[in-house]
Amino acid sequence: MSDKLDFIRDELEEMHRSKSYINMRTMESPADGWMVVDGRRVLNFCTNNYLGLANHPRLKKKAQEAIDKWGVGPAAVRTIAGTQALHLEFERRMAEFKGVDSSLLVQSGFCANQAAIPALVGRNRATGEQDVMFSDRMNHASIIDGARLSGAKIVVFEHCDPVSLEKVIEENLPKYRRGLMVTDGVFSMDGDIAPLDKLYAVAEKHGVITMVDDAHGEGVLGRGKGIVAHFGLHGRFDIEVGTLSKAFGVMGGVIAGKQEVVDYIRQKARPNLFSSAITPGDTAACLAAVEMLDESEALVDKLWANTGYFRSRMEELGFDTGRTETPIVPIIIGDVAKAKEFSTRLFEQGVFAMALGFPTVPRGTARVRVMNTAAHTEEDLDKGLEIFARVGRELDVIS
Ligand SMILES: Cc1ncc(COP(=O)(O)O)c(C=O)c1O
Image (cartoon, rainbow, N blue to C red; front, top):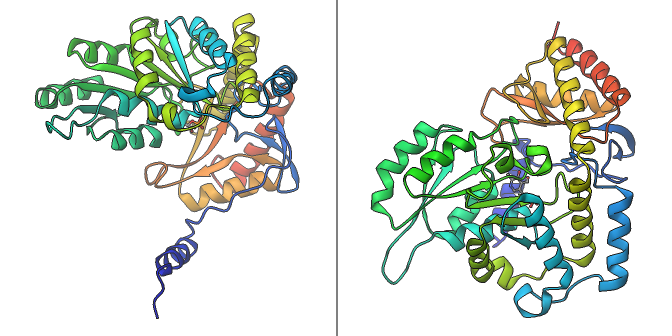
Protein backbone atom coordinates (compact mmCIF):
# COMPACT_ATOMS: atom_id res chain seq x y z
CA MET A 1 0.00 0.00 0.00
CA SER A 2 1.30 3.43 -0.81
CA ASP A 3 2.21 5.68 2.03
CA LYS A 4 1.80 9.47 2.25
CA LEU A 5 5.60 9.84 2.56
CA ASP A 6 6.46 7.67 -0.47
CA PHE A 7 7.28 10.79 -2.50
CA ILE A 8 10.08 11.62 -0.09
CA ARG A 9 11.61 8.15 -0.30
CA ASP A 10 11.31 8.22 -4.09
CA GLU A 11 12.97 11.62 -4.36
CA LEU A 12 15.76 10.75 -1.95
CA GLU A 13 16.44 7.55 -3.92
CA GLU A 14 16.50 9.54 -7.15
CA MET A 15 18.94 12.04 -5.60
CA HIS A 16 21.26 9.19 -4.64
CA ARG A 17 20.88 7.56 -8.08
CA SER A 18 21.64 10.81 -9.92
CA LYS A 19 24.43 11.67 -7.48
CA SER A 20 22.75 15.01 -6.67
CA TYR A 21 22.33 14.13 -2.98
CA ILE A 22 24.51 16.54 -0.99
CA ASN A 23 26.92 14.86 1.40
CA MET A 24 28.08 17.57 3.77
CA ARG A 25 31.58 17.56 5.14
CA THR A 26 31.99 18.19 8.88
CA MET A 27 34.12 21.07 10.12
CA GLU A 28 35.97 20.16 13.31
CA SER A 29 37.66 23.51 13.94
CA PRO A 30 36.76 27.22 13.52
CA ALA A 31 36.55 28.83 10.09
CA ASP A 32 40.12 29.99 9.37
CA GLY A 33 42.99 29.74 6.87
CA TRP A 34 43.51 26.11 7.90
CA MET A 35 40.72 23.89 9.22
CA VAL A 36 40.16 20.35 10.36
CA VAL A 37 37.61 18.88 7.97
CA ASP A 38 36.39 15.29 8.25
CA GLY A 39 39.39 14.54 10.46
CA ARG A 40 42.00 16.04 8.11
CA ARG A 41 43.89 19.36 8.55
CA VAL A 42 43.53 21.20 5.26
CA LEU A 43 44.22 24.57 3.71
CA ASN A 44 40.79 26.17 3.52
CA PHE A 45 39.64 27.91 0.32
CA CYS A 46 35.92 27.29 0.87
CA THR A 47 34.54 29.69 3.47
CA ASN A 48 33.51 33.30 2.81
CA ASN A 49 35.72 34.49 5.64
CA TYR A 50 37.23 37.22 3.43
CA LEU A 51 38.85 39.24 6.20
CA GLY A 52 39.63 36.34 8.51
CA LEU A 53 37.28 37.70 11.18
CA ALA A 54 35.27 34.52 11.85
CA ASN A 55 37.72 33.39 14.51
CA HIS A 56 39.20 36.78 15.45
CA PRO A 57 40.03 37.28 19.17
CA ARG A 58 38.58 40.81 19.27
CA LEU A 59 35.20 39.70 17.92
CA LYS A 60 35.10 36.65 20.21
CA LYS A 61 35.88 38.79 23.26
CA LYS A 62 33.14 41.31 22.37
CA ALA A 63 30.65 38.47 21.87
CA GLN A 64 31.55 36.94 25.24
CA GLU A 65 31.24 40.30 27.00
CA ALA A 66 27.87 40.95 25.36
CA ILE A 67 26.57 37.57 26.51
CA ASP A 68 27.59 38.45 30.08
CA LYS A 69 25.87 41.81 29.85
CA TRP A 70 22.83 41.06 27.69
CA GLY A 71 22.23 37.30 27.97
CA VAL A 72 22.18 34.82 25.11
CA GLY A 73 18.98 35.91 23.36
CA PRO A 74 16.58 38.85 23.25
CA ALA A 75 13.57 36.50 23.58
CA ALA A 76 11.34 38.72 21.47
CA VAL A 77 10.85 40.11 17.98
CA ARG A 78 12.27 43.58 17.39
CA THR A 79 8.84 45.28 17.39
CA ILE A 80 7.70 43.81 20.72
CA ALA A 81 10.56 43.69 23.23
CA GLY A 82 13.54 42.52 21.17
CA THR A 83 15.19 45.83 20.25
CA GLN A 84 18.15 46.08 22.60
CA ALA A 85 20.29 49.22 22.77
CA LEU A 86 23.05 47.09 21.24
CA HIS A 87 21.02 46.63 18.02
CA LEU A 88 20.52 50.37 17.72
CA GLU A 89 24.18 51.04 18.38
CA PHE A 90 25.13 48.60 15.62
CA GLU A 91 22.64 50.13 13.17
CA ARG A 92 23.93 53.65 13.85
CA ARG A 93 27.61 52.56 13.50
CA MET A 94 26.91 50.62 10.32
CA ALA A 95 25.08 53.53 8.68
CA GLU A 96 27.93 55.86 9.64
CA PHE A 97 30.51 53.40 8.25
CA LYS A 98 28.66 53.07 4.95
CA GLY A 99 27.93 56.78 4.64
CA VAL A 100 24.14 56.33 4.50
CA ASP A 101 21.31 57.75 6.65
CA SER A 102 20.17 54.58 8.34
CA SER A 103 20.43 50.79 8.56
CA LEU A 104 18.31 47.90 9.80
CA LEU A 105 19.85 44.73 11.27
CA VAL A 106 18.02 41.50 10.48
CA GLN A 107 18.76 37.84 11.15
CA SER A 108 20.68 36.96 7.97
CA GLY A 109 21.49 38.08 4.44
CA PHE A 110 18.86 35.63 3.19
CA CYS A 111 16.33 37.23 5.53
CA ALA A 112 17.32 40.72 4.41
CA ASN A 113 16.03 39.99 0.91
CA GLN A 114 12.81 38.47 2.26
CA ALA A 115 12.48 41.63 4.37
CA ALA A 116 13.28 44.31 1.81
CA ILE A 117 11.76 43.12 -1.48
CA PRO A 118 8.17 42.35 -0.35
CA ALA A 119 8.13 45.64 1.57
CA LEU A 120 8.86 47.59 -1.61
CA VAL A 121 6.95 45.77 -4.34
CA GLY A 122 4.02 43.40 -4.52
CA ARG A 123 0.47 43.00 -5.62
CA ASN A 124 -2.59 44.67 -4.16
CA ARG A 125 -5.18 41.90 -3.86
CA ALA A 126 -8.09 44.34 -3.57
CA THR A 127 -7.32 46.43 -6.65
CA GLY A 128 -5.32 43.86 -8.62
CA GLU A 129 -2.51 46.40 -9.13
CA GLN A 130 0.89 44.75 -9.45
CA ASP A 131 4.49 45.96 -9.30
CA VAL A 132 7.42 44.71 -11.35
CA MET A 133 10.91 43.67 -10.27
CA PHE A 134 13.77 43.71 -12.76
CA SER A 135 16.24 41.01 -11.78
CA ASP A 136 19.69 40.08 -13.16
CA ARG A 137 19.58 36.59 -14.71
CA MET A 138 22.24 35.35 -12.25
CA ASN A 139 20.78 36.82 -9.05
CA HIS A 140 21.11 34.86 -5.81
CA ALA A 141 18.35 32.45 -4.68
CA SER A 142 17.43 34.72 -1.74
CA ILE A 143 16.60 37.57 -4.14
CA ILE A 144 14.50 35.26 -6.29
CA ASP A 145 12.67 33.92 -3.23
CA GLY A 146 12.10 37.44 -1.90
CA ALA A 147 10.69 38.45 -5.27
CA ARG A 148 8.39 35.40 -5.44
CA LEU A 149 7.15 36.09 -1.93
CA SER A 150 6.35 39.69 -2.85
CA GLY A 151 3.86 38.77 -5.57
CA ALA A 152 5.46 41.28 -7.95
CA LYS A 153 5.95 40.32 -11.59
CA ILE A 154 9.56 39.20 -12.06
CA VAL A 155 11.24 40.28 -15.29
CA VAL A 156 14.78 39.09 -15.89
CA PHE A 157 17.46 41.18 -17.61
CA GLU A 158 20.62 39.72 -19.11
CA HIS A 159 23.57 39.32 -16.78
CA CYS A 160 25.31 42.63 -15.99
CA ASP A 161 23.70 44.20 -19.06
CA PRO A 162 22.35 47.78 -18.74
CA VAL A 163 21.10 47.72 -22.36
CA SER A 164 18.99 44.67 -21.60
CA LEU A 165 17.79 46.34 -18.36
CA GLU A 166 16.63 49.40 -20.29
CA LYS A 167 14.86 47.25 -22.87
CA VAL A 168 12.87 45.28 -20.27
CA ILE A 169 12.05 48.45 -18.32
CA GLU A 170 10.69 50.17 -21.43
CA GLU A 171 8.65 47.09 -22.38
CA ASN A 172 7.21 46.40 -18.95
CA LEU A 173 7.19 49.37 -16.61
CA PRO A 174 4.13 51.09 -18.17
CA LYS A 175 2.01 48.01 -17.38
CA TYR A 176 2.79 48.04 -13.66
CA ARG A 177 2.33 50.32 -10.65
CA ARG A 178 6.04 50.73 -9.82
CA GLY A 179 9.36 49.07 -10.54
CA LEU A 180 12.34 47.83 -8.54
CA MET A 181 15.73 46.88 -10.01
CA VAL A 182 17.70 44.32 -7.99
CA THR A 183 21.15 42.97 -8.70
CA ASP A 184 23.81 41.05 -6.82
CA GLY A 185 26.85 43.28 -6.31
CA VAL A 186 29.44 40.52 -6.73
CA PHE A 187 28.30 37.29 -8.35
CA SER A 188 29.44 34.42 -6.21
CA MET A 189 29.95 31.78 -8.91
CA ASP A 190 32.19 33.87 -11.21
CA GLY A 191 33.42 36.66 -8.96
CA ASP A 192 32.39 39.34 -11.45
CA ILE A 193 31.03 42.74 -10.39
CA ALA A 194 27.70 44.28 -11.47
CA PRO A 195 28.18 47.51 -13.50
CA LEU A 196 26.30 49.33 -10.77
CA ASP A 197 26.86 52.86 -12.10
CA LYS A 198 25.36 51.96 -15.46
CA LEU A 199 22.46 49.97 -14.00
CA TYR A 200 21.78 52.85 -11.63
CA ALA A 201 21.72 55.40 -14.46
CA VAL A 202 19.20 53.35 -16.44
CA ALA A 203 16.94 52.63 -13.45
CA GLU A 204 17.05 56.23 -12.25
CA LYS A 205 16.21 57.57 -15.73
CA HIS A 206 12.99 55.54 -15.66
CA GLY A 207 12.09 56.20 -12.02
CA VAL A 208 12.79 52.62 -10.95
CA ILE A 209 13.82 51.96 -7.30
CA THR A 210 17.40 50.67 -7.01
CA MET A 211 18.56 47.83 -4.76
CA VAL A 212 21.82 45.86 -4.62
CA ASP A 213 22.59 42.71 -2.65
CA ASP A 214 26.21 43.25 -1.68
CA ALA A 215 26.76 40.00 0.23
CA HIS A 216 30.18 39.36 -1.39
CA GLY A 217 31.18 43.02 -1.75
CA GLU A 218 30.61 44.08 1.84
CA GLY A 219 34.02 44.35 3.54
CA VAL A 220 35.70 43.63 0.19
CA LEU A 221 34.98 46.37 -2.37
CA GLY A 222 35.09 50.14 -1.84
CA ARG A 223 37.88 49.88 0.79
CA GLY A 224 35.58 47.59 2.76
CA LYS A 225 32.51 49.80 2.52
CA GLY A 226 30.96 47.80 -0.31
CA ILE A 227 29.98 48.13 -3.94
CA VAL A 228 28.01 51.36 -3.60
CA ALA A 229 31.14 53.08 -2.26
CA HIS A 230 33.22 51.35 -4.98
CA PHE A 231 31.10 53.13 -7.61
CA GLY A 232 30.81 56.37 -5.58
CA LEU A 233 27.03 56.05 -5.41
CA HIS A 234 26.43 56.50 -1.66
CA GLY A 235 23.54 58.72 -0.83
CA ARG A 236 22.05 58.07 -4.28
CA PHE A 237 21.41 54.35 -4.38
CA ASP A 238 18.07 53.52 -2.70
CA ILE A 239 18.85 50.25 -0.86
CA GLU A 240 21.96 48.24 -0.06
CA VAL A 241 21.38 44.78 1.34
CA GLY A 242 24.32 43.01 2.88
CA THR A 243 25.32 40.11 5.01
CA LEU A 244 27.40 39.99 8.17
CA SER A 245 28.15 36.30 7.64
CA LYS A 246 30.92 36.66 5.06
CA ALA A 247 33.59 39.40 5.34
CA PHE A 248 32.28 40.43 8.76
CA GLY A 249 32.70 36.84 9.89
CA VAL A 250 29.58 36.59 12.06
CA MET A 251 25.88 36.26 11.22
CA GLY A 252 23.10 38.67 10.30
CA GLY A 253 21.87 40.81 7.46
CA VAL A 254 21.71 44.52 6.96
CA ILE A 255 19.47 46.83 4.94
CA ALA A 256 21.03 50.26 4.51
CA GLY A 257 20.05 53.43 2.71
CA LYS A 258 17.93 56.54 2.84
CA GLN A 259 16.22 57.29 6.17
CA GLU A 260 12.64 57.06 4.97
CA VAL A 261 13.26 53.86 3.00
CA VAL A 262 14.87 52.07 5.96
CA ASP A 263 12.14 53.38 8.33
CA TYR A 264 9.50 52.07 5.96
CA ILE A 265 11.14 48.64 5.67
CA ARG A 266 11.48 48.51 9.47
CA GLN A 267 7.70 48.99 9.74
CA LYS A 268 6.71 46.60 6.96
CA ALA A 269 9.29 43.80 6.81
CA ARG A 270 7.86 40.55 8.07
CA PRO A 271 11.18 39.09 9.33
CA ASN A 272 11.41 42.22 11.51
CA LEU A 273 7.83 41.86 12.72
CA PHE A 274 7.52 38.10 13.11
CA SER A 275 10.96 36.61 13.84
CA SER A 276 13.04 37.21 16.95
CA ALA A 277 15.90 39.67 16.99
CA ILE A 278 19.49 38.63 16.38
CA THR A 279 21.40 37.58 19.51
CA PRO A 280 23.52 39.99 21.64
CA GLY A 281 26.66 37.91 21.05
CA ASP A 282 26.28 38.13 17.27
CA THR A 283 25.35 41.82 17.37
CA ALA A 284 28.36 42.74 19.51
CA ALA A 285 30.72 40.74 17.28
CA CYS A 286 29.26 42.49 14.19
CA LEU A 287 29.75 45.85 15.89
CA ALA A 288 33.38 44.97 16.64
CA ALA A 289 33.89 44.01 12.98
CA VAL A 290 32.54 47.37 11.76
CA GLU A 291 34.77 49.21 14.26
CA MET A 292 37.83 47.25 13.13
CA LEU A 293 37.15 48.05 9.48
CA ASP A 294 36.60 51.69 10.29
CA GLU A 295 39.89 51.88 12.21
CA SER A 296 42.09 50.19 9.62
CA GLU A 297 42.04 48.97 6.04
CA ALA A 298 44.93 46.56 6.66
CA LEU A 299 42.79 43.42 6.37
CA VAL A 300 41.15 44.65 3.16
CA ASP A 301 44.64 45.33 1.73
CA LYS A 302 45.82 41.87 2.76
CA LEU A 303 42.78 40.26 1.15
CA TRP A 304 43.44 42.02 -2.17
CA ALA A 305 47.20 41.34 -2.04
CA ASN A 306 46.51 37.62 -1.49
CA THR A 307 43.91 37.62 -4.25
CA GLY A 308 46.25 39.28 -6.75
CA TYR A 309 49.10 36.90 -5.89
CA PHE A 310 47.00 33.73 -6.06
CA ARG A 311 45.15 34.64 -9.23
CA SER A 312 48.20 35.77 -11.20
CA ARG A 313 50.13 32.60 -10.25
CA MET A 314 47.14 30.41 -11.22
CA GLU A 315 46.94 32.17 -14.60
CA GLU A 316 50.71 31.77 -15.11
CA LEU A 317 50.25 28.04 -14.45
CA GLY A 318 47.70 28.00 -17.28
CA PHE A 319 44.44 27.71 -15.34
CA ASP A 320 41.30 29.39 -16.70
CA THR A 321 40.01 31.74 -13.97
CA GLY A 322 37.02 33.00 -15.95
CA ARG A 323 35.87 36.58 -15.58
CA THR A 324 36.63 37.18 -11.91
CA GLU A 325 37.43 40.67 -10.62
CA THR A 326 37.28 39.81 -6.91
CA PRO A 327 38.67 37.37 -4.28
CA ILE A 328 36.33 34.68 -5.66
CA VAL A 329 38.49 32.76 -8.14
CA PRO A 330 36.76 30.04 -10.19
CA ILE A 331 39.04 27.46 -11.80
CA ILE A 332 37.00 26.51 -14.84
CA ILE A 333 37.30 22.83 -15.70
CA GLY A 334 34.20 22.19 -17.83
CA ASP A 335 33.16 18.63 -17.09
CA VAL A 336 31.38 18.06 -13.74
CA ALA A 337 32.92 14.65 -13.06
CA LYS A 338 36.40 16.06 -13.68
CA ALA A 339 35.75 19.07 -11.44
CA LYS A 340 34.59 16.72 -8.65
CA GLU A 341 37.64 14.53 -9.13
CA PHE A 342 39.83 17.65 -9.03
CA SER A 343 38.27 18.73 -5.73
CA THR A 344 38.63 15.21 -4.25
CA ARG A 345 42.31 14.99 -5.18
CA LEU A 346 42.96 18.48 -3.81
CA PHE A 347 41.39 17.41 -0.52
CA GLU A 348 43.46 14.21 -0.39
CA GLN A 349 46.57 16.36 -0.79
CA GLY A 350 45.50 18.92 1.83
CA VAL A 351 43.51 21.64 0.03
CA PHE A 352 39.80 22.22 0.64
CA ALA A 353 38.16 23.81 -2.44
CA MET A 354 34.65 22.99 -3.62
CA ALA A 355 33.56 21.70 -7.04
CA LEU A 356 30.45 23.37 -8.48
CA GLY A 357 28.47 22.05 -11.43
CA PHE A 358 25.08 22.32 -13.12
CA PRO A 359 22.52 23.59 -12.01
CA THR A 360 24.57 25.90 -9.74
CA VAL A 361 26.59 27.03 -12.79
CA PRO A 362 25.77 26.66 -16.53
CA ARG A 363 26.38 23.25 -18.14
CA GLY A 364 29.91 22.75 -19.43
CA THR A 365 31.39 25.29 -17.01
CA ALA A 366 31.90 23.12 -13.92
CA ARG A 367 34.62 24.52 -11.73
CA VAL A 368 36.54 24.38 -8.50
CA ARG A 369 36.02 27.64 -6.64
CA VAL A 370 38.66 29.30 -4.50
CA MET A 371 37.68 31.90 -1.93
CA ASN A 372 40.71 34.04 -1.09
CA THR A 373 40.94 35.52 2.39
CA ALA A 374 43.16 37.70 4.55
CA ALA A 375 43.60 34.66 6.82
CA HIS A 376 46.15 33.08 4.44
CA THR A 377 49.87 33.76 4.53
CA GLU A 378 52.00 33.84 1.37
CA GLU A 379 53.43 30.50 2.47
CA ASP A 380 49.87 29.08 2.61
CA LEU A 381 49.18 30.35 -0.89
CA ASP A 382 52.43 28.86 -2.23
CA LYS A 383 51.48 25.51 -0.69
CA GLY A 384 48.02 25.75 -2.28
CA LEU A 385 49.46 26.73 -5.67
CA GLU A 386 51.88 23.79 -5.60
CA ILE A 387 49.03 21.34 -4.95
CA PHE A 388 46.78 22.96 -7.58
CA ALA A 389 49.60 22.66 -10.13
CA ARG A 390 50.20 19.00 -9.27
CA VAL A 391 46.52 18.01 -9.49
CA GLY A 392 46.06 20.17 -12.61
CA ARG A 393 48.82 18.20 -14.37
CA GLU A 394 47.57 14.81 -13.10
CA LEU A 395 44.15 15.54 -14.59
CA ASP A 396 45.41 17.27 -17.76
CA VAL A 397 43.75 20.56 -16.89
CA ILE A 398 47.11 22.28 -17.45
CA SER A 399 50.19 21.02 -19.27
C1 LIG B 1 24.21 37.32 -2.91
C2 LIG B 1 23.86 36.67 -1.62
N1 LIG B 1 22.82 37.13 -0.90
C3 LIG B 1 22.50 36.59 0.27
C4 LIG B 1 23.19 35.53 0.79
C5 LIG B 1 22.76 34.93 2.10
O1 LIG B 1 23.48 35.48 3.16
P1 LIG B 1 23.40 34.81 4.61
O2 LIG B 1 24.32 33.63 4.58
O3 LIG B 1 23.81 35.88 5.54
O4 LIG B 1 21.99 34.40 4.81
C6 LIG B 1 24.27 35.01 0.10
C7 LIG B 1 25.02 33.87 0.66
O5 LIG B 1 25.47 32.97 0.05
C8 LIG B 1 24.63 35.59 -1.14
O6 LIG B 1 25.67 35.12 -1.84
